[in-house]
Length: 166
Ligand code: PNS
Image 1 (cartoon, rainbow, N blue to C red):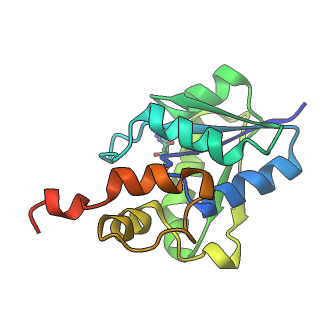
Image 2: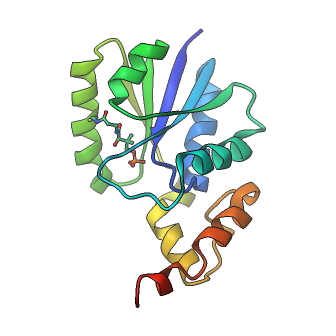
């Protein structure tokens, strides 16, 4: 049974994330989408909320489960015995950072490969940050996030720009 992980901040989950998870689920026996606490980011959603949204968005995929982890990704890889870390690549701008992370993870957990899936063309431009900005200004995000979490994301982010003083 080849077990792989799809790690990320998922703050919030987007259609681009679900696309990568879905494609990973078609390639591997077991996929764990893991909400990783990224110390460089201040999230808009709690870990529990991000887990809940990922569960709703992937409920139709029987070989996908959701987890969370704080600490090194390499530690999680070892803990669960994953054979690969699956990441989506949208553009060259993603590459340098992802390449650096892949090489670091390979050094820390040599037993796992990092596998990059090219983004689907429909989601090339999409990011959680963009979703947050559009939602904060009450724009339509229905093309960006799974229908199952649209209400959750809108409710949390609507009017967020007002709280930041601009
Ligand atoms: O969705 P993101 O924010 O691009 O995901 C990045 C994430 C969370 C996968 C990455 O920051 C991560 O793995 N963080 C855990 C800490 C760690 O292992 N750092 C060293 C890896 S190079």
